Image 1: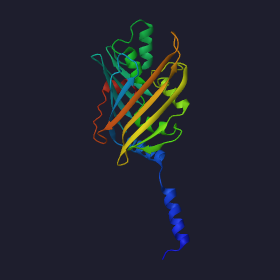
Image 2 (image 1 turned 120 degrees about the horizontal axis):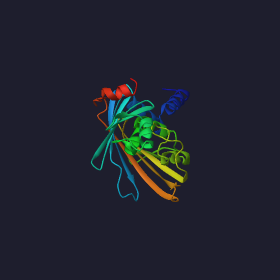
Image 3 (image 1 turned 60 degrees about the vertical axis):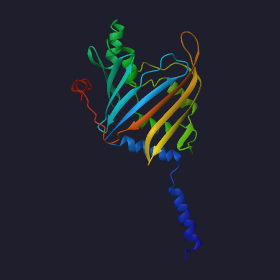
Image 4 (image 1 turned 90 degrees about the vertical axis):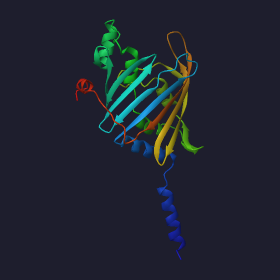
Length: 240
């Protein structure tokens, strides 16, 4: 018969070894980031918007490359990201965010790229985003087959500022008031299969303040089997 001391010690060790919801998400995000490759789709819905942004499709490999594309109004924009660098395909060839800004200032608008390309260059890899947002919640809890929690006001404000700081960002984002948000994760066998972020707040603009509510949904598939094809011209432009 086991002594009460041994039984109690075993129970304590079991409790210490238990991974809570936040640890589960961190482990799942790390597992996805460490995978040889994966595919994701990002769908964004903006409350009150007449036209929803096009779906973003991305393919990432462990070598650091990510190929992302977005189709909108019959036009497809493609970008290649590597670390904190990125290039977008335009009618004038592959261009960096600086190239796009220079073309816009010259009146060319970055033909075939422009604003759509600049926005695509700010794309954050969702595996890293999943891990980061897990650390920016007040608490994560398991509920209805998912793990969810509220974002801190600072994190919600950052999300509403459209991710300034990625390639393509220009200075500080717009002023945001009353920011709030939440994040929800779905896991299957310890793997991250879906993540949804909801943020809302009031954004200051040239024509006055406006309320915004945005829902962004990332879905993951083909982990370990995705084929990532990076154009050689894009590699050269990135200095690889």
